[in-house]
Length: 395
Ligand code: PMP
Image (cartoon, rainbow, N blue to C red; front, top):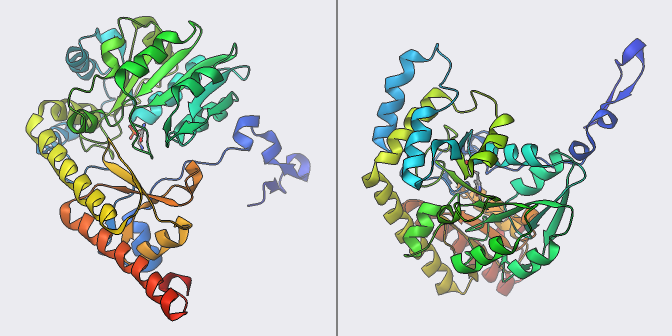
């Protein structure tokens, strides 16, 4: 796309790219999973399954849906900008004060608010290779410098991350478990890392998948338990995953009151809408629906990984509601071939993982359809290789 406009002041040309803030000029926007509607539009496929955005295949709690319906007639009013009821419920849940809870339009919003509250172009931000793509985005958008530490076995290498921290480091992001790798840091190791950081560094532990992790790794200790010990710790959570409310956009941060206050200063007053606040409140209380979703995830993860193991595809053991699998070749064409079979997964080349695909755990029949489609694609390649003809997706 040309950035040159011909209708500049007094008819001159303007290159708007030159007008952009330096960080924004080179920013590559976040690539979301392909929506089902896009596949229908572009490929004419209408019965596709989407396993591309780590959404909850069971959908939201019926109680959350009822709560949304109940507030619809009040939509002429602005939302409660302070999110009092939801913050009070979250504070109680986490054993903290409401002043320690910051609500966001999804946890992505919270991550961006943290960057805006703490970073200047003179600062550095440390995160791991293969880490969640929003960390470099929010860093670059405010003109700060991203310092990427090397990973180990696809996961965070805490020693390498500690070594990357310097006098200019203001923020460290750690996703536990990480997306798209699904790798988990042991709580004791992560806490030791947090404890060892210099006082001028804010550390964000992103626990977007916490509910799944707690289910898959019984006894897992979450980082919110450490808030009283570390004044520089921020923990983020979301209602988009296990609570099935990705479309409404609700996430939050937990921090010491002084840190939460700073993050709140850059927050738009009505960043979490009325429907989202009441749905989140109701979802929190529906333990039965949450439990049902966790069971679907546990079984689905086992179904997917058993299939990978059967055909010898190397997968990265995951503690979330998704799993990344190596396909032993550039994954882009395999992703495309899956699209043609009506299965949307996530290519992760932009995460430095060009031979992996990330698949979200779906309902049993959705997982089975993905497994079947992948099997057909890989088998067609093999038989074409044996016959010396181009494979289906190479044509
Ligand atoms: N953190 C991680 C690690 C994630 O994977 C995601 C979702 N892809 C988010 C944060 C943000 O999710 P949301 O904005 O929907 O809360």
